[in-house]
Length: 241
Image (cartoon, rainbow, N blue to C red; front, side, top):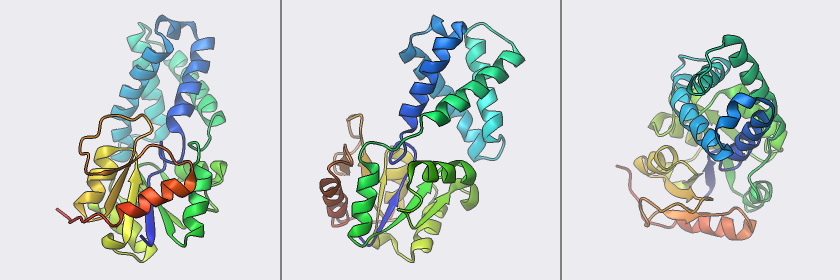
């Protein structure tokens, strides 16, 4: 495994944690949101985020526009239709979300161990360049990875082959010499398998696996053990579909 292709959000960067912390902050200062428990607010927000983010990936909305749309719909579900409140809530969420950015536990040491073992690291992520680059810098990943390919610059999103091809080209590698580590089954696992890259499903939540033959990793710590799991995945026979 000369090259590790790696997802960013919820694989190295703790997007879920930052999101939940931001929502908890909003719920404490905006009474309209207290009609839901934090768990229900988190779930409602997650559904909206996943749906509206598709418009970001397709270029129909900017990240800022998508955020306002998301919180407008959330307030509508709460029985409020107020553009000013929507703008206020969206801005407050962004500030709180960014203030809680941090790596997934073990991610920094894992990247260090991967690099020390002589493997190149290329981030493959469905998002905009500026947003993801800022996450790399804020988490200290920028000095630990060799390259990053975003869906914005690739023009296609995972699981499409094109974004993986561009990542492999950046590393000067081939599918047979790479492993893809990511938390999203369709985007990361199925996308990698479709082009003959060995997948490793990062499953912190320990959800049931759609396919137990796929190598699974539940933690990035201890780093040496995580690297051993990823390295073994490269030895599993595979073929592109």
